[in-house]
Amino acid sequence: MTTPALRRGQPIWLHGGLTPSQRPYPVLRGGHDADIAIVGGGMTGAMVAQAFVRAGASVAIIEAARVGHGSTAASTALLLQEPDYDLHDLTKKYGARRARRIWELGAAATRDFIDTIRSLRIKCDLLERDSIYYTLGAARAQRLRRELDRRHAAGLGGEWLDRGELRRQSAIDGAGAIRTHGNAQLNPLRACLGLIVAAAKRGALVFERSTVTRIARTRFGVRVHGEHGSVDAARVVIATGYATKYFKPLAGRFKMRRTYVLASHRFSWRERRRLGLGGVLLWDTERPYHYIRWTPDHRLLLGGEDRPVKPGASRDRQFAAAAADLRRYFYERFPSLRDVGLAAAWEGLFAMTPDSLPYIGPHRRYPGHTFALGYGGNGMTFASLAARILVEQWQGIKSEDHDLFAFNRHTKSTK
Image (cartoon, rainbow, N blue to C red; front, top):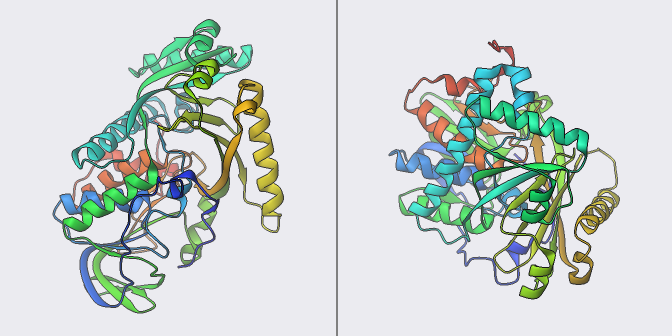
């Protein structure tokens, strides 16, 4: 079950003393048994494993490379409750009741993620932060204000920032913004490894450098084959981010995109005060959008400029062009960034679905399998949500919430 390179460049989480000490986990050898086999050792696999072991299931995680070192290590780790689609867009697609529930579940998943990290005492620089969703143009500001009105009518939170308040709270010279409480930021690699360590302490088996070659049905569930061993399980969770070549019939449901990140050099306190950007998570209404946040060691992470993967296109040229566009965008917003300079640049690979929502749950074509794929820009939030839904399905709990993220959701009523 091979995958293309999930990231490129050197994210700051992997150097500069920020990488947590990590003992290697063994290669999958011989035969093993578990209630749940999880293919993929990134943030989703880690959250799902933690949820299952807490529910009393035996778990085996099988990772082709090293746990946490794929797309998770490329993340800027903004834990946002808002989906990539505005409430207005989801309402047009699925109706007001279902759209509101999707937003409510995003908020609950964000809270669950924060509570899980804290309950396990994982040291990953977790900080709760407000987000500011801003726009630059007056016409878009009117649409954004109507979006906030829709959120309030649905019982959702958020407060309006006019041009002056936006400037005061973020140093952005824009036309307006929505400020939302209840989001967070963290070190994604530390969080992922901490979750896996916690699951392992409760009995989870963890295998690295173990490519899955085949998944076969058995009398009692599935057998997940690696090159040197196998795991027999009642079911397998596919947490690889998107449909790999092994699940080629599902590939058409995903559009692969690359996202790009720049990290500044460390700011001095004087430089940070001069910049004027407070401790918030910023993202804009542009498509592709841009986002920015501080790290605990006073760097700025600047991200966005997502671009579709184009077979045959030069990845080097695409990387260079996206990085240049990111620099240009943020230098225009924050001219003093030029004085501090940039220390690192990297890219990550992720999958988008047609409605920006993940696919969570079973697929009729693959008995014994459940999936957690296609997170767009909300990987950590939807990883937390997937953990909850998959455990509920394993426990036999029926819920309309599960239908919102099912493979067949596009055929259901929007009323």
